[in-house]
Image: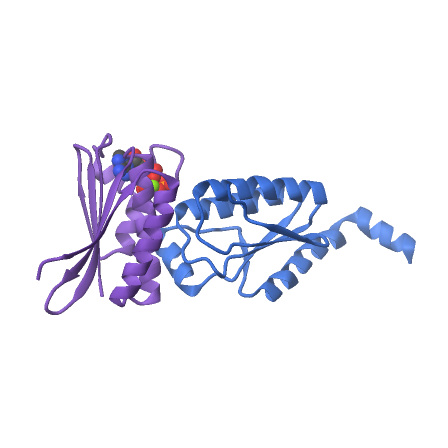
Length: 132
Length: 135
Ligand SMILES: Nc1ncnc2c1ncn2[C@@H]1O[C@H](COP(=O)(O)OP(=O)(O)OP(=O)(O)O)[C@@H](O)[C@H]1O
Ligand SMILES: [Mg+2]
């Protein structure tokens, strides 16, 4: 079955980040994810959303409900038209940061979710999925 | 801008983080706390995060910085009330929070703070001399 669009939201300001976390939490809870998985999804979303704002110069997030005969999932897509990620392996290695972060956002959110997909450049599109 | 309230109880400062907040609010908390620790000569800082729904790498970094900064200002910091889901999630994320004292409840946290603060008082020769004089 086709994915169901739950919400599309701009990611430009800190306010947007707080709203996005609340929206992700609400939808993950509505879909029936365990509280542990809700926390994991919210945390990954916070990392990726902050990257969109900080590194990607702002963009948007799409939250979708994935429906398969055997399983349900949530898909989050983060899109921006910023400078892009040129060396995927480097960006995804634990501890790599081009600013003054811990460099755990990309590698950590990959660990927290079941699927992780990065398309860049131009811009950056990161898609993550968690199955129930 | 919203600020997170800081309560002073004797030599201890108490912060309860209630809701999700902006990055700027977290940075302001670090500044406010440093100022209060110095102004009140606080020896202990208890941070209750039991109402927090998630800790990401930014928040983890702020908590680590608060603990390190307070140590430099002669104040011990104990983090209390972390939800199990958050402990599992930040470990998987890769945050270590090494060097941060933790306790499960506020009560345990206060007991730990007392121990940390008193261990230091007893360890100081000058403090011992003072005690001896008073006896
Ligand atoms: N949307 C994006 N656009 C451009 N570059 C990005 C984007 N997301 C991540 N990057 C690059 O990948 C690097 C690693 O990202 P990651 O989130 O792992 O660490 P960080 O953001 O630097 O630090 P932290 O997230 O721990 O605060 C970033 O430093 C940045 O160079
Ligand atoms: Mg990041």
